[in-house]
Length: 193
Image (tube, rainbow, N blue to C red):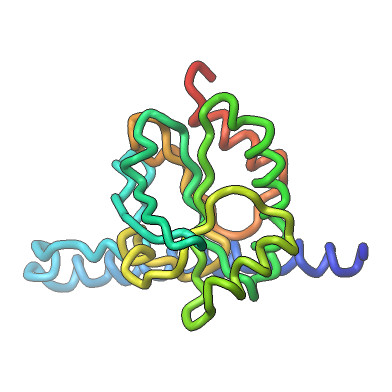
C-alpha cells in the first residue's frame, strides 16, 4: 500500500513538473517569436497554456452521469472547484477521496465540486462504476473535448481550477496536490475566508 501511494505521489509530482516545463517552453517560444518578427508581436496570443488566474472561469454546460444538464453558471454565487480527471489517471484517483472529504466538510458553506471526466470513448456506466469504487458523491460530468480547450488546454491530469463566488478563477493547479494544499486552495474561494 505504501509503495502504491508512493508511486502515485511520484506520478503526481512528475506530472506537475512536466506541466511546468511545458509552460516554460511555451513562454520561451512566444518570447522568441515576438523578438524575431514584428508581425508575430502584433498577433493575437494563443490562449493555450495561458493562466486563467484572476479571469472569469470559462462557461460550460455538460451532462452528468445520469444525463442531466449541468452548467457552471447555475453555481454562480458559490465557490466551485472544476477538476479535470480520468479513470485511468493514478494521481486523479489519489486526490479524489480528498475532494470528497472536502465536499462533505464544506458543502454547508456552499462549496460545489464538478469533476469533468476526460475519459473519451468511455461510457457513463463505466465512469460511474469507477467513481463509486473511489467513493465520490460530488457531481461528475461526462467528457466533451471543447471544455478543456476553454481552460487553456488541459495537457496533464489532474488539473484543477478554484472559482470564487463571483465566477473568477482564484487558483489553478496541475498534478496531484496534498490534501492540505487542496484545503488551503478551498479557503481562497470560500466567502469570508
